Length: 308
Image (tube, rainbow, N blue to C red; front, side, top):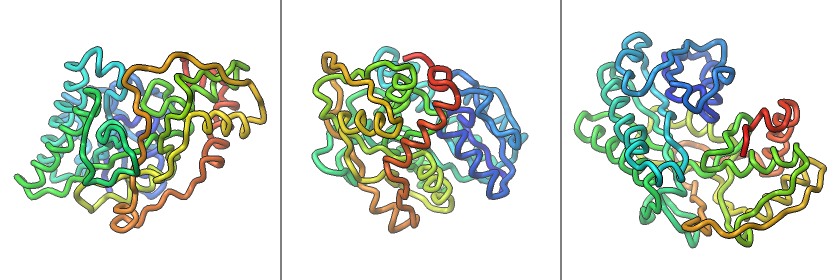
């Protein structure tokens, strides 16, 4: 198929590009390189350096049958400091993509977020759980989802939204939602203690990037909203121990003051994706961390993940 991947130079997007090329698709990457890296882009893909506002032109050249929309402003802190910019990228940018896709009859598979949309979760949240964003980032992603649903009703399209858990793996950006894995492993590579905010009991649903790619490609041809995660909560303390274990190095931990407004627990229920998409995350945390550590170690520690 002819596919276009927005944000295809980023962490998750570049892995999606690799997956599409591996199955024989013709792939175009649309990315402005504001956070993505040119070296992440598979040489087998066509590359267009442009903003989402220029999506119509990129779509006209690529004539895609499907669009995987992963370009985003993904930093919660930035969304709080600059909510207008966050909405411009995540909300208005998605509208540009939807309009471009409509012109070519292309389906949109949208990368959304679980934790930032559901807010605090006493138990794994399913897709019908209350949506209680605590930051503009979650609100903009939820708003973009509503645009997808509106287009589905208005134009009888079949767009789909995937609410990712905390994605980690090779090429991870330490400044995104799940950046703690890249930060921890980067600090281990530099021989620095792992900094933990608060008591470390905060828990997240860490899902390996290869599993996320599998779910993302499986969503093609479906419509609606699906959680993509493991359904398992891992505390920051347990994550710190696991990172040191896979690296075979003990650097210790140090605690800092809790960050205001940080979620205590964020876990998604992936049962619908298993029923409808045939997806189930198959990579254990230990194996995923080991693969990520190997990438960071070979890439030279700090150079692989950036400054923290």
